[in-house]
Image 1 (cartoon, each protein chain N blue to C red):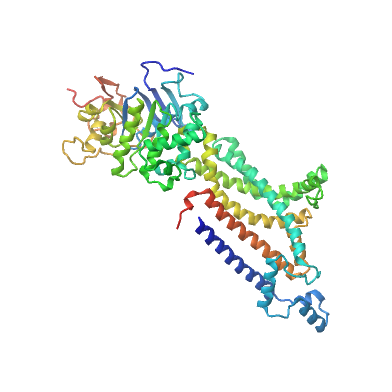
Image 2: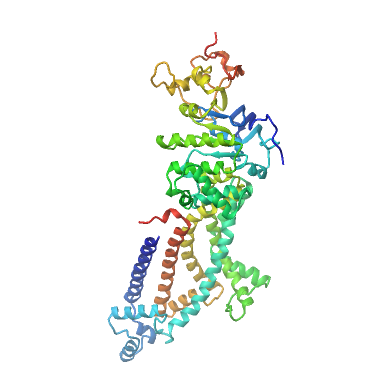
Length: 324
Length: 315
């Protein structure tokens, strides 16, 4: 087996592109890395490619899509793109794990939840039989489910949405993954439950020194959970950097629009939406993907802007905010 | 759970009672005097009256009904007006043949349809999956009796591998029993397998789109592992409904296939009894077939509860 190389990030994505059979680009040239123990948010409107990025990292893209580029996780030497399904299956649930958006449908309705948690241990031969069942109960206890032994015997429909999401988190953390991918894990939950579940995720990855890729469209959630943020639009990363810095002083006009729309630090204090709507896949313009909705766009924007960086913050814009 | 069992059983019993009244009423309202049918148009009034008394046909209808129903429950529905032989033992013998035929056909259909339908669903974007779906589409359109005739022509007449018809009881000669069962059971099963595989395909396609299957993959199960462990049981829920309905059509198909292969089953008994105007025999066999369909549907309802824990809600 492979060994961990010191200094190598938990997740390294290089020039990741995803295309359909007809050649439509859904993701274009994504490059980012997440270090061990680092918590990175991925934000953007619906249709900007966030979930697709998560599925590509997990190797769970629909077979009608083609991924190119490089995806590497710590503990596995080879590129995950083009890797055999058997090897990917061994990595999923161990090295990398995922929490999905919809807790109501993420669990098998005909299997007891304890069994579903124990399965993550048994398929990777971490435990079996009674031992796996005991560990499952302990995991359910860790994610704060009351009466874990009874809950293990319950079927998903007997649990609330928040409880089900806790079960999914227990499954994801069961084998101490090096990378946890969360796709809008609290969007479907009551506001009162959201914060507890977020705390659970943060505590879970901190305790394991795991890397976190956290997808959301809620900027407040990113501020609560993440240290660094990637802003996505039109299948591209348009800006990245430390959360506080990016939200306080966005350089890309799309990021600025998002920040204004969520009224976190918006100058007018009221709700301000980004004009226009997200084009459907394949309808994004050439050059800067945001230029059709951008107030600052000029003819120069018909050329793909290059990546600029200042310190930890980076952006892809011909007319960055704050430039003289 | 217990509540569901009780209500479903209640519904079954009421349906059986209603069906039995309907069957009895239909047979007795039909024009034609059983005594005249049995003795011929030239029989004397005295002879007919004697026959009516002998078989209790001169009693009021409710009494006759109660007598017949009591007999059905004790497997002794009475004596044939035509052959004057007890109906119970004849029907039981024939019922066994039909049960073997339908049971074997159903088992064969499931064994073929589940893997085939799953394959068609999983490979629905690939040429082999599409080709298999086309084959099953053709299979749906072919009637069972045609398959039976074809089988006889090829496997019995030309190749002489298997007998073209007849029946050997399993207790008499197990090998010959199987040899006689293969062709009719397969003829009956093929069409059912084609129909069933299409339902399995759509059920599996639905399951493939489910989030929990993606969760299973994210846990580290291979596509096949996820389908086997998490998909098939969920896909089975809609398929079981179809199975229940199909068993009813299988019984009808068995009537035809028994004719083609000259099997002494309920189907040949029923057709023979209709031809001879053996009214009580017809009435009894029809009631048995109706009861079989109702009982199958009752079983389907109970299997749901086993498969789907969401139905096990205490009310």
